Amino acid sequence: MQYPPKHHQDDTISHMIEVIKTYPLATIISVKDNNPFITHLPLIYHESGKLIGHIDKYNPQAELLNNNKEITVIFSGPQCYISPSVYTTTQLPTWNYIKVHLKGNVTAITNENIIKHSLVDMTRFLEQPDNKYQLSIDNSRMHGLINYIVGFEIEITHWEGKFKLSQDKKPNDVANARAELLRANQDSIKAFLDKVF
Image (cartoon, rainbow, N blue to C red; front, side):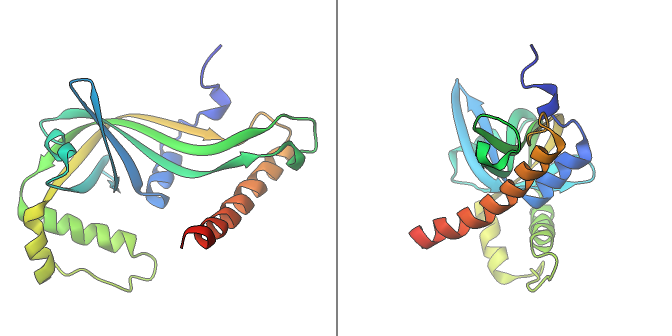
């Protein structure tokens, strides 16, 4: 039996790019001497097939983001518990989610000017659609910060989309699971923030 089931895989690159663009905070995993290093950073997708990012130079993972080393990157989309009560047919509880797993080769960006431009590009992308703030290339605070940042790019070599959205159910149940994913994410964010903030 194939695992994960084919109906929970989405090999459509454009769908995976939409996950990356909508949920750009990535989990970056490097391995050194069988020891995993994990950092969470926003990454921006470029149409060239590369991801661009920046990391604090004092982060121990920074030294592993160079020399064309292989790296694993995970992007997480919406997710939630699906109760059998949302279905029109008899089902068991499950969990629906969207994840994108990537592998790629990472190389450090050492040119300060390129790093500055990539910071400007990232800010412009993240400020969409209103662009209320624009980072200037000659921003004095960025000029001081640049000495503490390591830029890097990841050439994507492998894509895997995990879109577990009750696709194996009847059309009405698929629609109900989609509605539950929307409802649960909106409600759970508010409930969580009310508890911790």
